[in-house]
Amino acid sequence: MVTKKVAVVTGGARGIGLAAVEIFLAKGYDVAVVDMSYTVANELAETYSSVLPIECDVSNPDDVSAMAAVIERQYGRVDALVNNAGIAALHPIEETGFDSWKKIMSVNLDGTFLVTQALTPLMKKVSGAIVNVASIAGLRASTLRTAYGTSKAAVIHLTKQQAMELGEHGIRANCVAPGPVETELLAKLVEAAPEMKASYLETIPLNRFGQEKEIAEVIAFLCSPEGGYVTGQTIAVDGGFQSAGVGLT
Ligand code: NAD
Image (tube, rainbow, N blue to C red; front, top):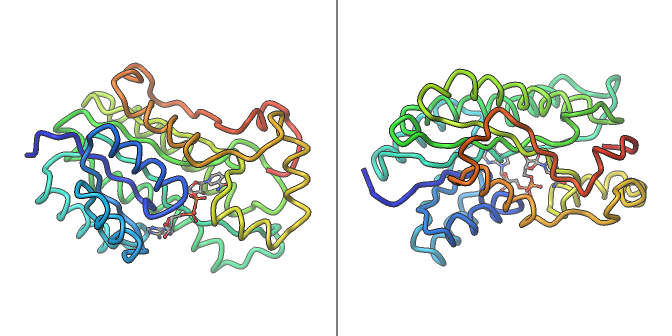
């Protein structure tokens, strides 16, 4: 088992996940970047010697088992697991195709379940911390988010299960629920529904979108010893959007 702390970040090749990877690296962790986009993760490894890129579809059980075997061989421990890989699509109930529903559930929910289950033995060794990335769409119902919001609500509940079941091993599990953050994922959604941007900005008390690093800093805090008595919680990191109680997301 290596002596350095080890973080595993799914969907770590870009966006919020990449911002989390950069914070863990700055804190001196070895970081496994688990992503479908291996090329980008590999480029990251060329820049940072402490990055291990692992190509993995988190919704594929075989990929996840292979990923966990690599991490066990390379590090033998997991101090921080960030289940961040996620996808989104905007459809109302009547227009949500079953394939689209299943795809969103499989990445956002099954992926969080599978990766956590596969890495739990390695987290038990060092009382690791889990942070799942949900969304404020999982905290309240909103237009067009039938599958996405439901998947994220389930992730919020799964977090409570993880905290309850794994607490006896010193493992903590928390969730962040970001509001809109300027990443590729959001850009695609706004492109499909351009009116959404103005509506968001009107509704967010801080009158701006979040930055990737602002979500990542909260993730890093929840994984740190400073967050050592926090478990089972969901923290909205959303410029006050959730508190304002109206709007799209
Ligand atoms: P993004 O699309 O910019 O990046 C997502 C990363 O996940 C990519 O590197 C992608 O290759 C990877 N990925 C996607 N599917 C995968 C899979 N099956 N297996 C492995 N890797 C996979 O997304 P983002 O905006 O950074 O979002 C990150 C997380 O934050 C997601 O869970 C998303 O639902 C959540 N979130 C984002 C926002 C936002 O406004 N951007 C708001 C709330 C919640």
